[in-house]
Length: 432
Image (cartoon, rainbow, N blue to C red; front, side, top):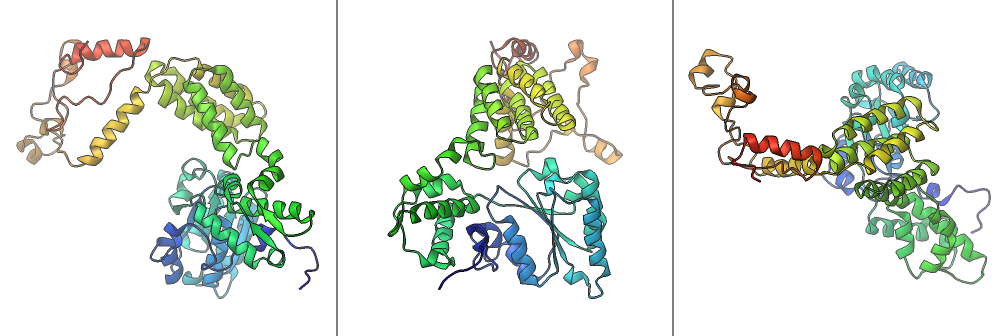
């Protein structure tokens, strides 16, 4: 059957409209899982879908609305403003058929791009159930969504599609797409398709469409193999893709260059990211993490400088933000390194998870009531400032953990001083 007219791209043609056709995210939409239960019960609350591009956030929101026969409004945070939000809320309030169980759904794509006033405009309607908000974001909601709005929403984490998911998506496209099913297509090799898609379903279908189009000009059967796929997207692979595999490769090289004390490589990878359009706040956040994890107590000023950089980048934006980002990148890479604080909290967390209920010694507990005082709370506590050198030899660990050392100072000028102090205080725990 001939196809006439201009068709949308393959990813849009293959967008599923039912949960049966939806691929991936079984931890959320599988039988008995939380989102599937919400849909089947009809009891829908506001939530945020957080995950990488091309994993089905927008599609899932549409399927939910269609499954529940709800009015469905969509906004893109890139182009919408406060007026657009208020107009939709007014429509929802004016719906004479409105009831709490059938509140319309407002889907906001890239909700992390909404500023504070735009997010605040949603609060009342979300709180009283006028709308059910579904937001989609590729950024950590803890950083990008205001606390009042975030507290009114659940957060569901979506994962990159696995190979089995990508394979299912590929097979469905070849069998069901209005154009592809009419062609004689053989997929001889899939490795390149899956590798370059990077767990992104939309990217997989885009690559497939490009490869099929390229092979169609050769005449005869269309054979998709690794060589064809690689040759078709070679130019794209060389470019920085802030939403794909290259994003993770370059940020990994950036952080490892800082950790390896190479300011030249670090600033080069910084330039790669900025030139490719990476979000400068993403880079600034990673600098804060690196300052705490890799420089740590060898140079405590590093974390202060990284945090200041984050604030400055947030305030001034690009292109000027490249300058403080470069300054802090060079500073961190050139600083002495220590991961002692990072290792200490990891060890302590492991112990806390293994034995979460070790009782706090009575002498370390407060005694705000007479009963607690009679039970021995706070009895035997030594106030450090009453003793020479503001130190009292007192065991602070719970029973069973006496003498456990989580913090092991690294060898650097600053921590050498810390170690000397700890050795003077705790010679039984910190030795030469």
